[in-house]
Length: 116
Image 1: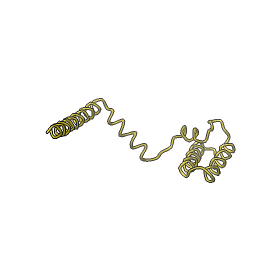
Image 2: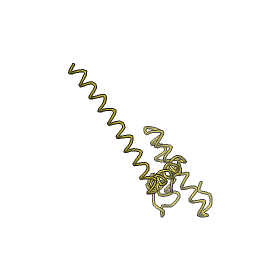
Image 3: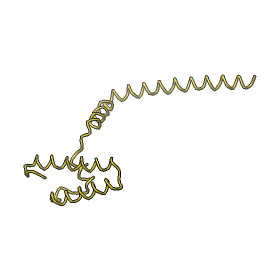
Image 4: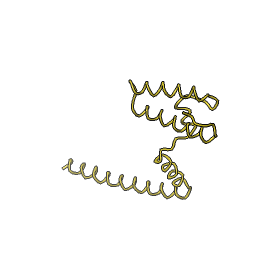
């Protein structure tokens, strides 16, 4: 008898808790949309979904600055790319490659000729 009452209390308490969490979540979404947070979050999500790498992120990945000559950037790229091919991860290797591509686009955009 006591086990049945305890089980009913647990089930009812769980239901109340789930409804309270759902209501709090709905209220948080409403508040976020009023404050513009939801729109900002969507913009960040869209940016991440398009996989656009910024110049700053590319420079951080390769460990270079804006003043670093292109030849030094290529040396760092080749070293990191080969190291990740041998005993690194494909994910890191692709990040290094995307960083180089990003910096190539930036270099071409600045009118410095062909980066290859």
